[in-house]
Image 1 (cartoon, rainbow, N blue to C red):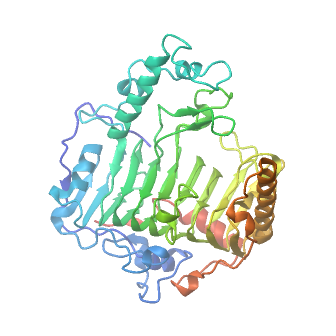
Image 2: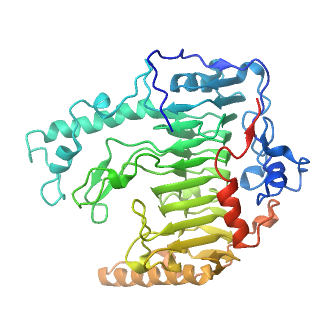
Image 3: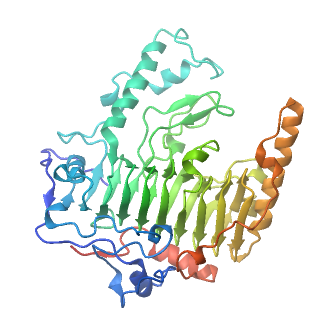
Amino acid sequence: MTSLKRDTPRPSTPRRLRRPAAIAASAAAVALAAGLAVAAPATARPAPTGGGVIKADDAAPTGWAAVGRGTNGGAGAPAESRYEVGTLSELKAALANNGKPMAPKIVYIKGTVDGNQAPDGRILGEQDYAPGYDIAKYVSCFGPDGKVWSDQTFEYCKKQRQLRQTGSNKMKRQIEVSIPSNTTVVGLGPDAGFVGANIVILSATNVVLRNLSVEAPVDYFTTWSPDDGNGAWNARFDAVSSVTSDHLWIDHVRLSDGRFPDSEAPRGPNGKPANRHDGLLDLKDGTDYVTISNSRLSNHDKTMLLGSGDEHVDKDGGKLRVSYIGNYFENLQQRAPRVRFGQVHVVNNYFTGSTDDPHYPLVSEAQGGSSYFLGAGYESRIFSEHNAFDFTGPGADPSIMVSSYNGHRFSDTGSWYNGQSADLNAIAKSSFEGNRAEAIAEAEAAGTAAPDWTGWDFTTDVGWNPADIYSYKAFSTPQAVRNHALRFTGPGVLTVKQ
């Protein structure tokens, strides 16, 4: 991707389209044209072929986003609420929609929108947000062992602390893009999309994102947390996140760290590179009715988090209903996804990784690491079927496929590991029971009560079946899942017609 840095900035007013444009194709139609893994819900008829074309007014064809009132974004928007944008200022003006941000609107992205682009066209960097900030100086203020911050460690420490805080806040105000209700955002080409932006769907309903390439923002002011395990970096900005929103369809989108892998970041007190990226696609605080389909997520650490804490039953209980259908998950070191509370359908996704990847190695718990693909968290109910996992490299083992994080209900049918049938249920059960025994032992040693989940038994009865809720058709061979992932995921697969 390339930044849209110009000598003369473009005007901040987005160009309205002179004629109605169409976005959001029926994935059911595309299924017939390109052999995808989804079918239309029982209440809708597939279009004859679709021709692999993205059109304006179709809704999410299947998955949780199709349930209830459905998800069609800005479908039906009048001509004056259809925009073509190429800069951050144009995008924000289009989303404001002439003072009617909640009304239906369709926004086409042409080229790359840079979240760090100032109104005058400059691309802002670390020193623009906080002149004088130095991450090496910041780290040095935790002392030689990296354990305790003190403003007195060096004469510059107080200043570095202040610069990090003010720089982070300035960066947030600059790069955050809030997507309001009844919005469709679609890229006009295979590389159209975002770099360096923090895309937030906040308290919104009915949002569609399609045919977009998204490079995760780099947090110049990531925080070192010495009390987080053995010490950890915690970045602030997700690439895409949803907070207390519902009915979202994310389709044919590519998300990754792109040009800025964390392996090339400055080193922290533990000798490891700073983590400059947070979540790639996080769903939090009661987000509900979401379908993520035909998308490609790659080269990232903390990838997809559903629910932000075991204690948030008041926000997340009975929600976080999400479908992951026909996606390609490549070199994702953890959280692909990690689920709390939700009823989550994971079908026909292709997971790949290696123990010796130079930038994003996956090291399973069995190998002494913390990498995994599916994470079954507290009160989660994951229904997995016909997913293909290819994990290679020295020491690669099938335990990478699923880990339990206090989650005791998990069901898989028909998935494969390196082309052979795999027993994910046995792996999930073993992980849960191992964690339960460890938690009980720790509680006994401390003389405290064990957590409530230690009193539960593992079960493959997750209490729901997606086939009872929406219609879909799954591939039944690992070759078909791989072929779909490699050929038909991400932007540029479908033609966008205006």
